Every structure is written in structure tokens, then in C-alpha cells.
Amino acid sequence: MEEKTRYLDIENLSICKITEDDSEALSSFFCGRAELDDFFHNQILICAKHHYVSAYCVRDTITSDILAVFTLANDAVIVDNMEDREDFIEQSSLKINKEYISTFEKQTSFPAVNIGHLGVKTGFQSLSIGQMVIDFVLFTFSQFDISGCQFVTVDSLNNPRTNKFYMTNRFLLQTSLDIFNETRRMYLPIQFYKD
Image 1 (cartoon, rainbow, N blue to C red):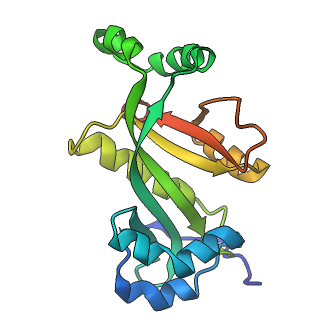
Image 2 (image 1 turned 90 degrees about the vertical axis):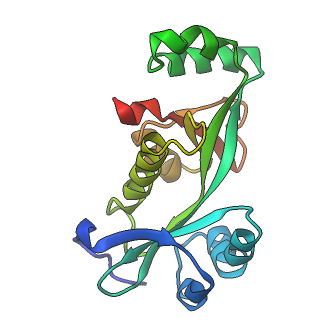
């Protein structure tokens, strides 16, 4: 197992789209989660080619090593269960502009972008690379008016470490009905980034 890097210079990192040219680098990328590593090695390029996801990596600009891989896809936060809807509106509307509240409260579907398949290379975990990815997504979708997008969503692997990472980054649980599932559905209002 690689020795963990104790210091990481964020200034030497860049986020870029993954291309076919990255196939060799992806084959040697391991985050330690078998299902994610399998996706990165065998499926990510074909999924990106067919527009199922857009694939990105965090790259060390000095060594060209890929330190993290993630995907983005269009999504929606759909809240049709009344119990979940009340909690969702209460949690989300704390950050919604007053002029938009009455429209917001009438909706059952909200445009979102999904961060999927986020994996950080073993030896580089817990060094704020995942935080860098979240900041990149929040900045991109709050600053560039490409399409409507009110939330960032994730389907967090349902384990204490991963759930804690997203909750520390202000993601909220969308429902309590998935507590025993393999993943937990979470969302983050993009408005949090603007404030």
C-alpha cells in the first residue's frame, strides 16, 4: 500500500475532462473501493462517450498523475413523499430568496447536477481533494448560467466515512427511507455556495 502523502499543494492540481488518452492512467488508478475501481477501469470511458456522464479527473500538474476521478450528470431532486417534502422545504427554504419561496414551495421537482463515482486515489485520501471537487462543482454551477440548477446531489456509499464526508460538506439527507440501502441520497442547495 502506498504511503500517505502528508502534504498536498492544491495549487499544483487541476480539474480536467477525461479523454480516451487517459485510459492507461485510469487502469493504474485505485481508490480502494472495488465497485468504483471497476467502473473507472472498465466503464467510465464508454459511459462518457455515450453521454451517460461527463468524466473528470483531478490531476497533479507536475507529475500528470490522476489523483481523483468523478463524473457529473444531470439530475433532479424529486420530493413527492409528503413527510420528506415538509423536511425538504424546511431545510432548503432557509437559503431560498424570499421572492422565490412561494414558487419553490409549489414544486415537486428541482433541477440538479449529480456528482457520481467520486474516488480519490489511495494514499491521497483525506487531503481535501474531495472538497476541491465539491467546490469546483458548486462554483461552476453557481457562476455559469448554462442551465437551471438548484442542487448538487450525490448517492453516497452508505458507510460512516463517506456519509460523514458529505455531511461535513453541508449535504443533507433527502430521505430516511434509504437508511439500509447501499447508498444514501443527499443534496446540497447551490445557494449555500453563494452565501
